[in-house]
Length: 316
Image (cartoon, rainbow, N blue to C red; front, side, top):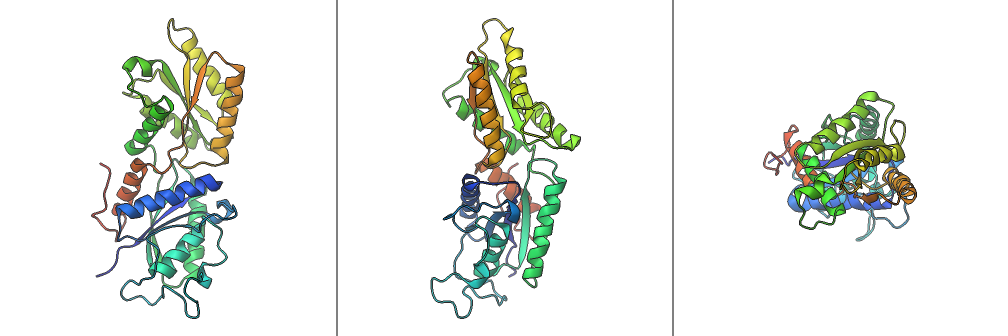
């Protein structure tokens, strides 16, 4: 029986160690939900975390073993037990190349179903990821890829994850409709010189607002596009300041999958604004992170690619 292709999730964008750790947790989650499926993940090489002491690239279920009919050994000839195989040396922690190396060497993977972890339109990121995959094809003879083209957002699963992050920022207590009605959300994206990419964040904001009872969901960008975070907060404050009896509460919601310098910059900008506007209750939500909703979506995309297992759990 031909084994299913390995699931390879690929991140793009500068990532710090916290983001790399979140990706490892996410890969582990995917593997635990699919024990027989080789799963790996990493960031494109120039964006990988290089923090000392970080674990190798994310890999679930790594260990000695073969897929029938493949000749790549789990431990390379001449390597002593416990030694790192030469094929696994020299890769940046958390990198795509490291993830591919571990899947090829330890799990004898030859075919990969690749899901890019991008939230919106990202032509440059797609091109960079595919160039990185081409390099891996040159490094390992006989491997191939099926690649999911298109962003993850704004899928209903991700909107649910964002809503959960908002509830966490508000305290996760039992809330009434009036609590949400007193809350304005500032959805913060990375920003782009591509107007269509920026427009997608506005679409996501509208979909997040629909039917959830927030006073408003406004938009800001960390860089390259207006409005910036302070300007977005100014607008949120103006929208609520003229409503009698309404608490001026704003939740800054980063539209990012993983921690990194852009979400951190957004938070710093918002904290600076909050210090100068102490009458506004500013709260901070977390990034989407290793959320079950994200796992549902990735597995749905995996199952739709050629040759993938069709029994993988999917989010309706």
